[in-house]
Length: 311
Ligand code: NCD
Figure 1 (cartoon, rainbow, N blue to C red):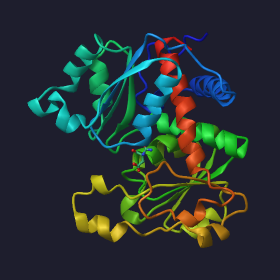
Figure 2: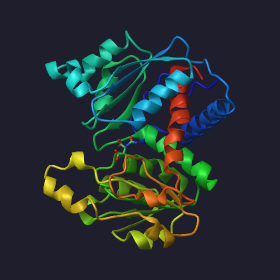
Figure 3: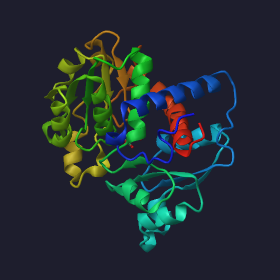
Protein backbone atom coordinates (compact mmCIF):
# COMPACT_ATOMS: atom_id res chain seq x y z
CA UNK A 1 0.00 0.00 0.00
CA UNK A 2 1.46 3.37 -1.00
CA UNK A 3 0.51 6.73 0.48
CA UNK A 4 2.43 8.79 -2.09
CA UNK A 5 -0.69 9.99 -3.92
CA UNK A 6 -3.19 9.72 -1.05
CA UNK A 7 -5.38 12.84 -0.68
CA UNK A 8 -3.61 14.46 -3.64
CA UNK A 9 -5.36 16.39 -6.40
CA UNK A 10 -4.40 15.48 -9.97
CA UNK A 11 -4.54 18.88 -11.66
CA UNK A 12 -1.46 19.41 -13.82
CA UNK A 13 1.17 17.04 -15.18
CA UNK A 14 3.86 19.36 -13.80
CA UNK A 15 3.01 17.94 -10.35
CA UNK A 16 3.36 14.32 -11.50
CA UNK A 17 6.76 12.90 -10.62
CA UNK A 18 8.48 9.83 -12.06
CA UNK A 19 7.72 7.84 -8.91
CA UNK A 20 4.01 8.70 -9.33
CA UNK A 21 4.05 7.54 -12.94
CA UNK A 22 5.49 4.14 -12.06
CA UNK A 23 3.14 3.75 -9.11
CA UNK A 24 0.09 4.53 -11.28
CA UNK A 25 1.28 2.27 -14.12
CA UNK A 26 2.11 -0.65 -11.80
CA UNK A 27 -1.24 -0.34 -10.02
CA UNK A 28 -3.06 -0.11 -13.37
CA UNK A 29 -1.26 -3.20 -14.69
CA UNK A 30 -2.27 -5.12 -11.57
CA UNK A 31 -5.94 -4.14 -11.98
CA UNK A 32 -5.85 -4.83 -15.70
CA UNK A 33 -4.66 -8.39 -15.15
CA UNK A 34 -7.44 -8.99 -12.59
CA UNK A 35 -10.04 -7.71 -15.08
CA UNK A 36 -8.59 -9.73 -17.95
CA UNK A 37 -8.65 -12.94 -15.96
CA UNK A 38 -12.34 -12.34 -15.20
CA UNK A 39 -11.75 -11.43 -11.56
CA UNK A 40 -13.58 -8.81 -9.48
CA UNK A 41 -12.25 -5.95 -7.41
CA UNK A 42 -13.97 -4.63 -4.31
CA UNK A 43 -11.46 -2.07 -3.09
CA UNK A 44 -13.82 0.92 -3.61
CA UNK A 45 -16.97 -0.59 -2.04
CA UNK A 46 -18.73 2.14 -0.05
CA UNK A 47 -16.92 4.95 -1.90
CA UNK A 48 -18.53 7.50 -4.22
CA UNK A 49 -17.08 9.25 -7.26
CA UNK A 50 -18.69 12.50 -8.43
CA UNK A 51 -18.30 13.33 -12.12
CA UNK A 52 -18.90 16.97 -13.07
CA UNK A 53 -18.77 17.51 -16.82
CA UNK A 54 -19.31 21.11 -17.88
CA UNK A 55 -17.90 20.28 -21.34
CA UNK A 56 -18.75 17.38 -23.68
CA UNK A 57 -17.11 13.99 -23.19
CA UNK A 58 -17.71 10.38 -24.12
CA UNK A 59 -14.52 8.52 -23.33
CA UNK A 60 -13.22 10.36 -20.28
CA UNK A 61 -16.51 10.31 -18.41
CA UNK A 62 -17.43 6.74 -19.31
CA UNK A 63 -13.97 5.40 -18.48
CA UNK A 64 -13.90 7.13 -15.08
CA UNK A 65 -17.36 5.84 -14.25
CA UNK A 66 -16.52 2.35 -15.52
CA UNK A 67 -13.31 2.44 -13.48
CA UNK A 68 -15.20 3.24 -10.28
CA UNK A 69 -17.89 0.60 -10.89
CA UNK A 70 -15.26 -2.05 -11.70
CA UNK A 71 -13.83 -1.57 -8.19
CA UNK A 72 -17.23 -1.87 -6.49
CA UNK A 73 -17.66 1.88 -5.98
CA UNK A 74 -20.58 4.09 -6.94
CA UNK A 75 -20.98 7.20 -9.07
CA UNK A 76 -23.01 10.39 -8.85
CA UNK A 77 -22.94 12.58 -11.90
CA UNK A 78 -23.85 15.95 -13.33
CA UNK A 79 -23.70 15.57 -17.08
CA UNK A 80 -24.21 18.74 -19.12
CA UNK A 81 -23.32 20.63 -15.97
CA UNK A 82 -23.01 23.87 -17.93
CA UNK A 83 -26.76 23.86 -18.52
CA UNK A 84 -28.17 21.47 -15.91
CA UNK A 85 -26.26 22.42 -12.74
CA UNK A 86 -26.58 25.55 -10.62
CA UNK A 87 -23.80 27.06 -12.76
CA UNK A 88 -26.69 28.72 -14.61
CA UNK A 89 -27.60 30.44 -11.33
CA UNK A 90 -24.08 31.77 -10.85
CA UNK A 91 -22.73 29.04 -8.56
CA UNK A 92 -18.94 29.16 -8.28
CA UNK A 93 -16.68 26.13 -8.58
CA UNK A 94 -15.23 27.01 -5.18
CA UNK A 95 -18.68 26.56 -3.63
CA UNK A 96 -19.27 23.35 -5.58
CA UNK A 97 -16.05 22.09 -3.99
CA UNK A 98 -17.34 22.99 -0.53
CA UNK A 99 -20.54 21.04 -0.96
CA UNK A 100 -18.97 18.13 -2.84
CA UNK A 101 -17.07 16.94 0.18
CA UNK A 102 -20.33 16.11 1.91
CA UNK A 103 -21.40 13.92 -1.01
CA UNK A 104 -18.44 12.11 -2.51
CA UNK A 105 -14.97 10.75 -1.75
CA UNK A 106 -13.32 11.89 -4.98
CA UNK A 107 -14.42 13.99 -7.97
CA UNK A 108 -13.54 14.50 -11.63
CA UNK A 109 -14.24 17.79 -13.37
CA UNK A 110 -14.13 18.83 -17.02
CA UNK A 111 -14.67 22.49 -17.79
CA UNK A 112 -13.98 24.92 -20.63
CA UNK A 113 -11.94 27.31 -18.47
CA UNK A 114 -8.26 26.77 -17.82
CA UNK A 115 -7.72 26.64 -14.06
CA UNK A 116 -11.25 25.40 -13.32
CA UNK A 117 -10.09 22.16 -11.68
CA UNK A 118 -7.80 24.19 -9.42
CA UNK A 119 -10.71 26.45 -8.44
CA UNK A 120 -12.84 23.43 -7.54
CA UNK A 121 -9.93 21.95 -5.58
CA UNK A 122 -9.51 25.23 -3.66
CA UNK A 123 -12.95 24.71 -2.17
CA UNK A 124 -12.95 20.93 -1.83
CA UNK A 125 -11.68 18.78 0.98
CA UNK A 126 -11.63 15.66 -1.22
CA UNK A 127 -9.19 14.80 -4.04
CA UNK A 128 -10.05 16.53 -7.32
CA UNK A 129 -9.01 15.09 -10.67
CA UNK A 130 -8.78 17.34 -13.73
CA UNK A 131 -10.61 15.65 -16.61
CA UNK A 132 -9.66 18.49 -19.00
CA UNK A 133 -9.65 22.26 -18.35
CA UNK A 134 -10.14 24.22 -21.56
CA UNK A 135 -7.00 24.38 -23.66
CA UNK A 136 -4.95 23.72 -20.51
CA UNK A 137 -4.31 20.25 -19.18
CA UNK A 138 -5.58 16.69 -19.34
CA UNK A 139 -3.29 14.82 -16.94
CA UNK A 140 -5.16 11.51 -16.79
CA UNK A 141 -5.12 11.32 -20.58
CA UNK A 142 -1.34 11.63 -20.63
CA UNK A 143 -0.97 8.95 -17.96
CA UNK A 144 -2.97 6.52 -20.10
CA UNK A 145 -0.97 7.67 -23.13
CA UNK A 146 2.33 6.91 -21.43
CA UNK A 147 0.95 3.56 -20.24
CA UNK A 148 -0.07 2.82 -23.84
CA UNK A 149 3.36 3.77 -25.23
CA UNK A 150 5.05 1.50 -22.66
CA UNK A 151 2.79 -1.39 -23.69
CA UNK A 152 3.00 -0.81 -27.42
CA UNK A 153 6.70 0.11 -27.74
CA UNK A 154 8.05 -1.85 -24.77
CA UNK A 155 9.85 1.24 -23.42
CA UNK A 156 9.48 4.95 -22.70
CA UNK A 157 13.07 6.13 -23.01
CA UNK A 158 14.76 7.45 -26.15
CA UNK A 159 11.75 7.45 -28.41
CA UNK A 160 11.17 9.60 -31.48
CA UNK A 161 7.67 10.96 -30.96
CA UNK A 162 5.62 13.09 -33.35
CA UNK A 163 2.79 15.07 -31.77
CA UNK A 164 0.73 16.55 -34.59
CA UNK A 165 -2.37 18.64 -35.24
CA UNK A 166 -3.73 21.49 -33.13
CA UNK A 167 -0.86 21.84 -30.67
CA UNK A 168 -1.96 25.31 -29.60
CA UNK A 169 -5.32 24.26 -28.19
CA UNK A 170 -5.00 20.51 -27.65
CA UNK A 171 -4.77 19.84 -23.91
CA UNK A 172 -4.00 16.16 -24.51
CA UNK A 173 -1.00 17.25 -26.60
CA UNK A 174 0.15 19.72 -23.92
CA UNK A 175 -0.03 17.17 -21.13
CA UNK A 176 1.69 14.45 -23.13
CA UNK A 177 4.57 16.76 -24.07
CA UNK A 178 5.18 17.59 -20.41
CA UNK A 179 4.87 14.02 -19.18
CA UNK A 180 6.79 12.22 -21.91
CA UNK A 181 9.47 14.91 -21.65
CA UNK A 182 10.57 13.17 -18.45
CA UNK A 183 11.76 10.19 -20.51
CA UNK A 184 14.22 11.92 -22.83
CA UNK A 185 12.33 11.77 -26.13
CA UNK A 186 13.19 13.42 -29.43
CA UNK A 187 10.05 15.39 -30.22
CA UNK A 188 8.66 16.39 -33.60
CA UNK A 189 5.90 18.97 -33.08
CA UNK A 190 3.97 19.16 -36.34
CA UNK A 191 1.31 21.81 -36.85
CA UNK A 192 0.33 24.71 -39.07
CA UNK A 193 2.16 27.89 -38.02
CA UNK A 194 -0.96 29.27 -36.27
CA UNK A 195 -1.45 26.15 -34.17
CA UNK A 196 2.04 25.67 -32.76
CA UNK A 197 2.80 24.24 -29.33
CA UNK A 198 2.76 27.03 -26.69
CA UNK A 199 6.22 28.51 -26.30
CA UNK A 200 5.97 28.06 -22.52
CA UNK A 201 6.04 24.29 -23.11
CA UNK A 202 8.74 24.18 -25.82
CA UNK A 203 11.03 26.48 -23.82
CA UNK A 204 10.66 24.47 -20.64
CA UNK A 205 11.35 21.21 -22.48
CA UNK A 206 14.36 22.64 -24.33
CA UNK A 207 15.60 23.88 -20.97
CA UNK A 208 15.56 20.26 -19.82
CA UNK A 209 17.73 19.33 -22.80
CA UNK A 210 14.93 17.80 -24.89
CA UNK A 211 15.44 18.00 -28.64
CA UNK A 212 12.41 19.43 -30.41
CA UNK A 213 11.95 19.80 -34.15
CA UNK A 214 9.00 22.06 -35.00
CA UNK A 215 7.62 21.94 -38.52
CA UNK A 216 4.48 21.62 -40.60
CA UNK A 217 5.74 18.59 -42.51
CA UNK A 218 3.96 15.49 -41.23
CA UNK A 219 5.42 13.07 -43.78
CA UNK A 220 9.03 14.01 -42.92
CA UNK A 221 8.27 13.61 -39.21
CA UNK A 222 6.57 10.21 -39.38
CA UNK A 223 9.42 8.85 -41.49
CA UNK A 224 11.60 9.20 -38.36
CA UNK A 225 9.10 8.40 -35.61
CA UNK A 226 8.43 5.49 -33.29
CA UNK A 227 5.11 7.05 -32.24
CA UNK A 228 2.66 9.36 -34.00
CA UNK A 229 0.26 11.11 -31.62
CA UNK A 230 -2.38 12.75 -33.82
CA UNK A 231 -4.87 15.36 -32.56
CA UNK A 232 -7.98 16.94 -34.04
CA UNK A 233 -8.22 20.68 -34.65
CA UNK A 234 -10.11 21.91 -31.58
CA UNK A 235 -13.18 23.53 -33.12
CA UNK A 236 -14.59 24.73 -29.80
CA UNK A 237 -11.52 26.89 -29.06
CA UNK A 238 -11.80 29.02 -32.23
CA UNK A 239 -13.37 32.46 -32.04
CA UNK A 240 -13.58 32.80 -35.85
CA UNK A 241 -15.39 29.89 -37.57
CA UNK A 242 -13.60 30.66 -40.86
CA UNK A 243 -10.23 30.05 -39.20
CA UNK A 244 -11.40 26.61 -38.12
CA UNK A 245 -12.74 25.86 -41.62
CA UNK A 246 -9.40 26.82 -43.14
CA UNK A 247 -7.30 24.77 -40.73
CA UNK A 248 -9.45 21.73 -39.93
CA UNK A 249 -8.24 19.57 -42.81
CA UNK A 250 -4.55 20.44 -43.06
CA UNK A 251 -3.54 16.92 -42.07
CA UNK A 252 -4.98 13.61 -43.14
CA UNK A 253 -3.49 10.51 -41.62
CA UNK A 254 -4.51 7.67 -43.93
CA UNK A 255 -3.09 4.32 -45.04
CA UNK A 256 -1.06 6.02 -47.80
CA UNK A 257 0.62 8.32 -45.29
CA UNK A 258 1.33 5.47 -42.88
CA UNK A 259 3.00 3.56 -45.73
CA UNK A 260 5.60 6.36 -45.78
CA UNK A 261 6.18 6.18 -42.02
CA UNK A 262 8.90 4.34 -40.14
CA UNK A 263 8.07 0.64 -40.13
CA UNK A 264 6.18 -0.46 -37.03
CA UNK A 265 5.28 3.08 -35.93
CA UNK A 266 2.65 3.20 -33.15
CA UNK A 267 -0.31 5.38 -34.12
CA UNK A 268 -2.16 7.09 -31.30
CA UNK A 269 -5.01 9.61 -30.99
CA UNK A 270 -6.87 10.75 -27.86
CA UNK A 271 -10.15 10.65 -29.83
CA UNK A 272 -12.63 11.85 -30.91
CA UNK A 273 -11.35 12.06 -34.48
CA UNK A 274 -12.79 14.70 -36.75
CA UNK A 275 -11.49 13.89 -40.22
CA UNK A 276 -7.72 13.90 -39.56
CA UNK A 277 -7.48 10.12 -39.08
CA UNK A 278 -9.02 7.82 -41.68
CA UNK A 279 -10.78 4.58 -40.93
CA UNK A 280 -8.47 2.82 -43.39
CA UNK A 281 -5.79 3.09 -40.72
CA UNK A 282 -7.85 1.23 -38.09
CA UNK A 283 -6.80 -2.26 -39.15
CA UNK A 284 -3.15 -1.38 -39.70
CA UNK A 285 -0.55 -2.98 -37.48
CA UNK A 286 0.45 0.09 -35.47
CA UNK A 287 -3.06 1.50 -34.94
CA UNK A 288 -3.25 1.67 -31.15
CA UNK A 289 -5.93 4.30 -30.50
CA UNK A 290 -8.74 2.00 -29.48
CA UNK A 291 -6.37 0.06 -27.20
CA UNK A 292 -5.27 3.47 -25.90
CA UNK A 293 -8.91 4.31 -25.09
CA UNK A 294 -9.32 0.97 -23.30
CA UNK A 295 -6.19 1.70 -21.23
CA UNK A 296 -8.04 4.65 -19.73
CA UNK A 297 -10.03 2.26 -17.54
CA UNK A 298 -7.16 0.60 -15.60
CA UNK A 299 -5.25 3.90 -15.39
CA UNK A 300 -8.28 5.71 -13.97
CA UNK A 301 -8.98 2.80 -11.63
CA UNK A 302 -5.43 3.20 -10.30
CA UNK A 303 -5.78 6.96 -9.89
CA UNK A 304 -9.12 6.78 -8.10
CA UNK A 305 -7.85 4.08 -5.75
CA UNK A 306 -4.52 5.76 -5.03
CA UNK A 307 -5.85 9.26 -4.29
CA UNK A 308 -8.49 7.86 -1.93
CA UNK A 309 -6.03 5.44 -0.29
CA UNK A 310 -7.94 2.32 -1.33
CA UNK A 311 -5.59 0.58 -3.70
C1 NCD B 1 -9.50 14.88 -25.68
C2 NCD B 1 -9.97 16.08 -24.86
O1 NCD B 1 -11.13 16.16 -24.45
O2 NCD B 1 -9.13 16.93 -24.63
N1 NCD B 1 -10.44 13.84 -25.69
C3 NCD B 1 -10.43 12.93 -24.67
O3 NCD B 1 -10.54 13.26 -23.51
N2 NCD B 1 -10.24 11.67 -25.02
C4 NCD B 1 -9.04 15.25 -27.03
C5 NCD B 1 -9.97 16.04 -27.91
O4 NCD B 1 -11.11 16.33 -27.55
O5 NCD B 1 -9.52 16.36 -29.01
